[in-house]
Image (cartoon, rainbow, N blue to C red; front, top):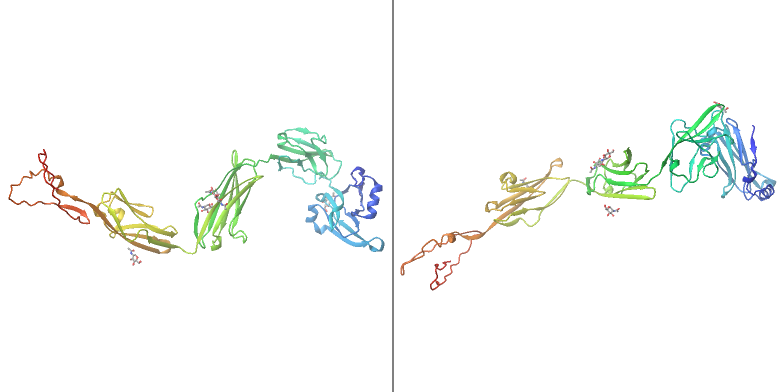
Length: 473
Ligand SMILES: *[C@@H]1O[C@H](CO)[C@@H](O)[C@H](O)[C@H]1NC(C)=O
Ligand SMILES: *[C@@H]1O[C@H](CO)[C@@H](O)[C@H](O)[C@H]1NC(C)=O
Ligand SMILES: *[C@@H]1O[C@H](CO)[C@@H](O)[C@H](O)[C@H]1NC(C)=O
Ligand SMILES: *[C@@H]1O[C@H](CO)[C@@H](O)[C@H](O)[C@H]1NC(C)=O
Ligand SMILES: *[C@@H]1O[C@H](CO)[C@@H](O)[C@H](O)[C@H]1NC(C)=O
């Protein structure tokens, strides 16, 4: 095993070895057997690290090592004078390029106290720890945050370039662009110039290796959020239920859509998502579906959308009925009165039903709307225009939900009143009205009206010399 161990004094905590020795004696932090800031080794070799401390120890290592735990062995034992100290040995075999990263030994009781070493695992044709030559990795630019092109390398002293397409080479000046072989290229204050397609490039033995990155400016602009129903929803227990939340956001926004709903804790609903790219905007769909509604699914469904610091939400309520029903009652009693000549008269009942029923009005046993063109069904009511005496009769409203064979009916009797009228009134003045003294003459008055009018006779003496005859009535 060959280690390339390098001391980097300025990076060593304590700044001077003497001080390092002192803290080592007290072991306020664990100590590694490798005191260099980094190690470089060939792939397929075995990595050995030993750590010593006063209390129980634990290790942290790159995520890729966590995934390859079968390659890793950690042995703990007591050590030092009278076995007062704790020692731990880590063995990673074989070490692979992807294991490149920081290994640190910490106290279990205080993870801040640590000793760390960065291990480069070099592969012959793998200058980059992560290789993605064809499909660029997408990086998001966030306001006020540094931008990192994470092209970490497997050997510390490789010559890496950052290139912006098409062909602009960006030189790291360690101020505006920083190169760090453990992290990649870092742009502390990115601007719009850092939006586009970039690549990290290395030439080894005449071969060009490149990793591509596509940067996007993160925008947080939600343009619209809506559910495919704004009306309160009604459903039956056992029904399938689905709700569509549509979100329109600015083109390169990233949004997160979450739902709040009554059955959230027991996961009764499944949620599926879709994204459609438009010219200037993106449409996100989130569909919540429940295969079989239960009574407990009754309540408010809220679709909440967040994009960075902005958020919007919208909701709709769902009522779950146990079974289909029709509730039908008189609104103003079974006997109603209208007045002939009325412009319109509305016959209405109190009706609640689910699912939506079919409503038919009958007059004296025949379908009302077919009987007379003045009869119109509006909603669940029957409207009679220009009320006439012949509209009196017995009306029946039939309510039915065919699918569930549910039927109800209700009967209303309508009386049409008419203002009393005197039929002779128009002709009375045309009679001469001259009667010989001493003879008898019958006066006739015919009246019409519903209910029948009561007739009273009144007499007025004639005016002395009037040009017109005195009124009789
Ligand atoms: C490591 O071993 C694998 C197979 O065991 C081999 O394909 C690879 O080339 C080796 N890598 C190096 C750097 O020797
Ligand atoms: C519901 O979502 C689908 C996507 O599966 C979409 O095509 C459809 O237009 C949406 N409907 C409404 C009414 O929003
Ligand atoms: C809403 O969208 C879902 C899924 O596309 C659909 O199953 C459901 O019937 C829609 N609801 C309404 C009220 O349109
Ligand atoms: C539901 O939406 C309405 C407006 O659409 C709003 O007034 C109400 O506060 C919302 N309710 C909840 C619980 O979010
Ligand atoms: C109205 O309902 C009663 C039972 O409530 C039923 O006997 C009658 O046949 C129904 N009438 C019509 C016209 O359906």
